[in-house]
Image (tube, rainbow, N blue to C red; front, side, top):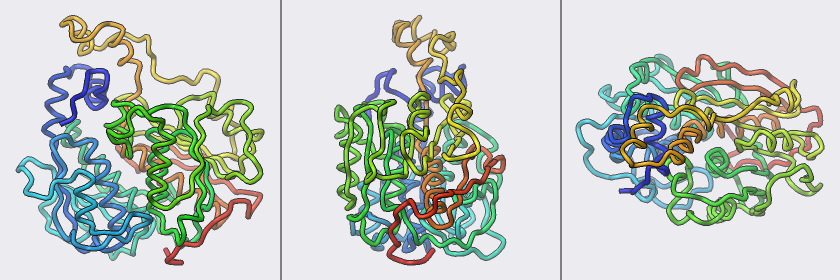
Length: 448
């Protein structure tokens, strides 16, 4: 069991932010009881099924402290993306799954359209559509891909967490359906996942950046060694990142995120370039460096600089996540060039959580009880909270928009959605005028 100080316990901070009346010990007890049982059958050998299951597991082991249990058709070979060869069962156990009987109170999640009707919720990929529902599909479904699969896995774990831990009665009660390729339009697409980014620059390797790297690792590259990734982040991994950042492990703590991310990427065959400098007004992309930039930082001035034409990138896809308990499942994506300039996307008064706000009753009680000093309480009140599931959905959308830009020179330059109800998704389309500027690699399957 991970021992967390109050300052490091992002999970408890999330619950106390979402409901200020919940005290620390009660929040921790709820998290320690939270358990999920994942099942998989016919979907296990497929690439989309493995992308769904692996993503669901990596998210769930960070969100369900009571344990993540998995049963089903697990003795199949890994075939997804750049994952090391081996059995699916072994990979899941290494990720932290428990391959034994789950407690009766575990919330149940099934990957695929087969299986019994006793599960709480099921998820699947239908072409580009990621679907989460309490019931089976009413019509035939098409073979999915790894991006819709990753989206489905993350969205499903969000539903389970909101129901089991946050006591949201709406979670899992309705069908949720979203396409990372065409957000805002829950429709099928005939675009095959054949052209994949051959070069990409990742700015920020926290919650969002690690999710982008995870999603890139799921893509069916024919030769991952021919893919160049520039990884930029000056910050070091810390214990509080364990709950929220998809790739962070104990071994990462105290070392820069860029170096840790590079080691992870190299194990999957990618060529990486590490930079631990901060992105500044003088940062310029070199002519041979990646023209595709994925941005995942919470610093508004840096986001403006990266999206500015002077930085020299051909396509910038920026993701931002909600930072409070009420917004933790919300995401917004900006792409540049687009209809709005960076200054319009992030006005001068844009800011993060208010660090000087009044303490919630739960935080005030910790101060009164001598368990936390006021300075620490104020820091917690002003800190961002997050969950890996929202970051993964954002990352899947970012990568899907990059693939769409490469294949069709179109993408969305503004996307707003919330995992609590993806039917509220809005999106605005744009076109990449300078076609052919983004280098790509064909997938090994040459199909969707």
